[in-house]
Length: 236
Picture 1: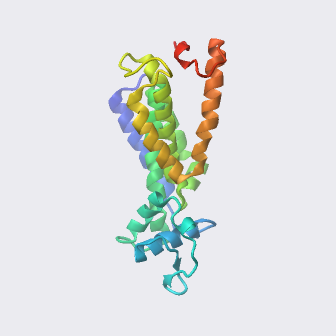
Picture 2: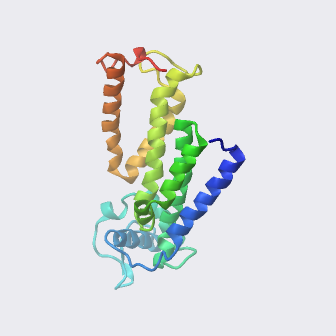
Picture 3: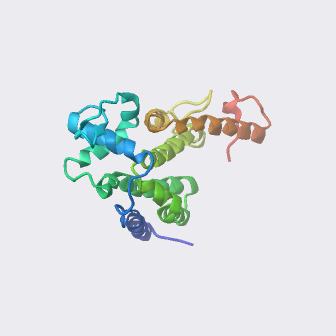
């Protein structure tokens, strides 16, 4: 099935609208649950004091509890929520809006990464649509948690890491060949995305397991079990 570039952009826009509507509709009808309270208290406290200090809603003052490590966790996500308080009242619907927007960003990221991997607009659109209507994804994007931002960042990190390892062997413009044959154009993006992803959640460390299986798979493929012998692997 062939889809033109213009039609693919139109379909992607429709998918984005569907994803946004599913995430935003009745966003404030359910009350805060579980760890959402931690994010709300920390972000509102930051908006009021300029420091990562949880807010005590009963006393209408910063909490006397000292737990800065918890309050400033994933602060790059939480600071976005705190900025909303400057323009919008701290209602449940408003404070969940950042997660909704990151859910929409993830739709675009999935489309782009899928298009890069599979070189097929049809597959990329299918992947973006499945995320847009996925019930677990919608549920995550309707809560005030860093996972909504972590998902697209980690996906971009994986894509950049793979490109760092693979594309140096497949393209003639690689800056360096030999040990690892890395495509150094992706080194800085991979490093920055990795640090950002690690800041958001320690689940980022799962990349080590993925890299281990990557080494094993490539070694089996070339009948060479020496993981340092990347430069001699064959690519088709």
